[in-house]
Length: 482
Ligand code: ADP
Image (tube, helix red, strand yellow):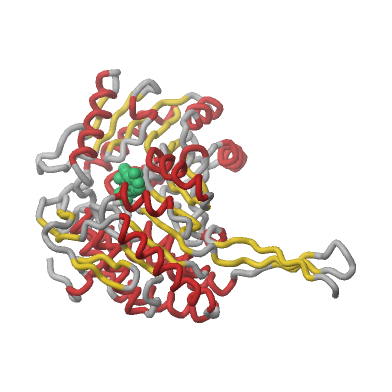
């Protein structure tokens, strides 16, 4: 696959103010659809991470001292470069991650929207003047950048999970040291190349590739890092939380989900099918907001199952560069095996495969888009995130029943439901123990809205006007003798 600008696919890491080139002793990155080599990135560790943190601390001081308008202008330029290069960035993303090219380019535009949004928000980081408690005093509240931020991001959104963190961090006046997922480092490196071109000061943004454990250990132990922002599994998130305790860092954690998708009998079934396709099958089911459990009310269960199975049967699986492909490969063999185990477990316990249900004839890590009916709470799909193209259909009687089932999980990220009656819409939206609720829609993520979870799904919010607050500290100044 040729790029218009081949310099965007750079086999190097950006450590503080210098690039470190990879050689063939580095980490191998392969295209999950074909197994072909995409390239190498350097295998770095604690020493380079420390170097990047030290450089970030220096660069951050100068960056924070600039006016908000100057920071905003550079972020705006970065956003524009992402849009100008969206085709190349999309190709790099498909090459290393596998998602269809149209979806990958869509992610680039979505990812860039966070940089655009926070370029705008940079100028609106207002403080407060609070009525004083004594005649000669005035109380000022200012918001200041937290300082050096460390970020660790996953492979399912190799671009947007970075911009959603870097946009607000830079807007607030912070520096960032990033470790992207080893499966998908080239998308991260490409946006670092563009950050340089946009005029982001040297040292402000580092992209360190290499051992997650070693880089993570330095990031969490180093006292200069004042915030860690992580998107990934709950298991690793909890480990990082623990590692950050001795240095009392602020934490942003976007962790696992187990999203319910509820179809009430007053729903528009065609709209619900369309929403389910997006909420379940986007990124081949590999997103933390993917519908994991579909609850359908008794009266419409059979009709909905039939419509969904028919629609799913039309989704084309294949290489993300091929025309008309909607579903790419799974990221790796472990992901494939997990999907297989979940389907086998459901079938063993009485689940009925109505569509798909096995490895795809394409081989590799391709799996058929699958719908399973008659799913019950004792099956693995009810409790664990499948992270693949499998839609399990549960049956429910009434509102109380489905709310109890939907909330019966340790996770609390996204949830979805389809209904028309207004009072039901409010009741259910309020009763779902989730950070996000999509009503009559399967697509909720956008730069303007606060993304995040409750319970084991994490801490903090990304995007929206709340997202920038996470990268600030509040300082109270008491002016006396007035
Ligand atoms: P996923 O299942 O999405 O791969 P992980 O939580 O395993 O989720 O990985 C998300 C990110 O966290 C990746 O960038 C990965 O390299 C990184 N990571 C994995 N283990 C650790 C660790 N022990 N310390 C720091 N980062 C880690």
